Length: 431
Image (tube, rainbow, N blue to C red; front, side, top):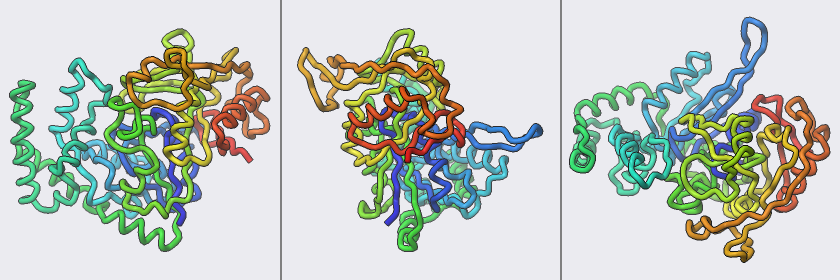
């Protein structure tokens, strides 16, 4: 049963959007299984302009990256928390581009909705002295309500009485928190009911039982690509808790977030940036708070696709990657942004950790140990040659191939693809 899962193997921002766009040429369905509009998947698409063919960059937050391939159906699964404003903005932008949506976009009736009070609570909490470094998009508070069994789902929009009852209960509680703790103005129930029922009218044609749709597709042997957001090291169970996201970006999250069985999974592909980055707070063993880190940031354009925040940058970390490969069942990796390293004289790779001078082989997920880590590095000679114009893996500089093949060997995995730029034609398949 042919379901491939694309997983970010680091702290997110690995370039999953490009990989999904590349694979979408040969699949029937792309399905997003968790997260919300806190994710930003960037796709660079060939565009016809007055001077001939050019490229344009698009950032998607909710709609799967396969939408630019017109034969592909795109599913937003039940594991996603849906922001109506962000969704309608994306749909509008795609309509302006002439991208057909009718019959191609399917939204789970069981997806939970982000409400105005979720965004407000998220923003206020991030102003405190114990910031996680969230995007402030209301994702965490929406998942809190989901697991408190007080969340509002897309299906609730169909019945004004149900919606009103749930909202009055929720807003009563939230208004008490907002007014007493944060001295914020109270929210208006009727105003929100009207706003969300208007939203329901606009998305009604897209809403369906997506789990049933995917089940039927599997029976018909359709090719399905499951797209995660963020990265494995931000997983709420397996990441650097509490500095994590509020869902499960790991491969296991695809089953619960889409309503598909584990037996449907045929392969898991990990996306790995050629160096490491992290957005928000939390431990980052190979972070470079120096000129090299700043150089990686500027050369790689390492600024958040959703918030524009500068990303923290550092060298590739094989200890955390081995952990990610293990918990996700990653069989092969796609390496992105190799070209960012083109001008470095030397490139370091973290091959091990020491804590209190004692070597540890596995990635620890408790904060106390992570804060004590001293990385051990292996240094590679840089290739000092532009790679963005290379169109075949065998044509990469010998030192670039040595870098890739050495760390792949240390990871015990195989490299399937190498990206040397954002465009579709800057994709090298490793035979």
